[in-house]
Length: 129
Image (cartoon, rainbow, N blue to C red):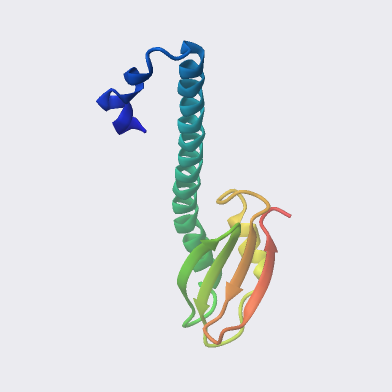
């Protein structure tokens, strides 16, 4: 549409009602604004997830510090859930400690799931409650 407008095809209909042309431009403007808002929202969400992931990694590393040989493999966010993949030779420390460490680091209400190297998923709960 921008190419045809730039080439002057919009001027070919000079005899038509100028109100229709105005409505077309308003509709296009609203369409571009809606797409722009969605792009900004998606970018903001991506930036926030990129900020929260290292914070969650640090908190999970501190949480596992008491377990000899335990380490954080990966922290990722899918949908609204934070997945923390860990490798541990023994049992996990209490997940309540992890949730308490995550408070203030990531927003309240984010569900946290701990995935062990054996494939076991532990539903830790939600941050802040």
